[in-house]
Length: 203
Length: 203
DNA sequence: GTCTATACGCGGATAGAC
DNA sequence: GTCTATCCGCGTATAGAC
Image 1 (cartoon, helix red, strand yellow):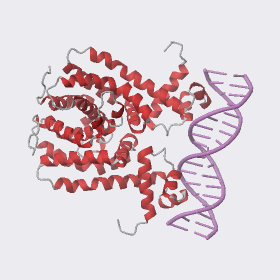
Image 2: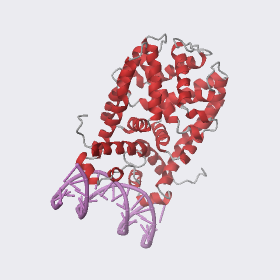
Image 3: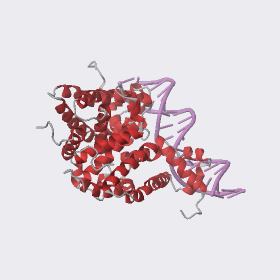
Image 4: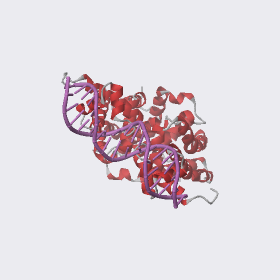
């Protein structure tokens, strides 16, 4: 942040994020990380006190970096309806295109300690949910606004989670893997769910 | 199933399911399982060739056991609309009340090998999705029926996943943890999403 | 079926030289 | 900042007695 950060430290964080995301924390040893970075295990312990410390730093980097753009993106939208669509676009893409982010997110929701879950919630979920709740309040839906926003987030996360099973589904078609098709499907579905009218207030 | 199964084997499977669900496969050693069961590690290797073999057996037991009732349950419903409601009820309860099932499910979707994902899909998802797809085809929605069923499943799984973060949410209320409230919320939301009319065709 | 004993490599972590 | 060398407990898995 101050401009004089060691490159090795960043390399470690990037490698660690990727390995943790793909194999899980316990399955990835400090030796593994060191080997991929191209340094010795002892060197890792120079940069990070212990494994837990490395994990936290990797999570902070990934979650902080990836969610930073949203605030600006949402505030640039003219209307609540556009903010809503904008969020769906952004979150679907983030969660489907950035496997490091989405896999670390799932791992934290599954195995994170209460303390780490608190950090995760504040970094990833608090702002978006707070902003979108305002959007929901302006809708004709009589459902609980916060619960509705949670549903929107849930359906996107759920689709990402289920994507792993879709290729093995008997009924499945190939284009379920297409992010753009999913986005359109979700926008239409959620619009109906929260207004009762397809394409209400849309271009 | 044949009545002459060793009790120790079943104990091992039950203990393994629980430990794997709560901590993950790599974090649970054969020693751990043996210790909780109350036998020696060597004894585990008498019943299960290796760790992978124990994992598979535990998964097969949990997924097979928990999903068995659905077939009968759905076929006992009079109308497609009732099948739909029935599924939501059943799946939300399964996923929220049976943490062993839901956590193992998440772990498999996240880290399962293609082979294990194929097994999981056929055990847990294929039948329900196939049956519910028929229900969706009868609805006035113009959305892809299979994609819609995936959305229904996704929103439930997603809510389960997010539940871990809700207690740390600033906007959160206490009753988001109430399964019954969630069920009603989802039924209303999904009914609107797929018919455009709240409570259409409902009692 | 269940035990004791053990092989052997991997894991986190540290000391101290350069 | 990075290395070599090392400690020590844990992990999977096996051999062979009871």
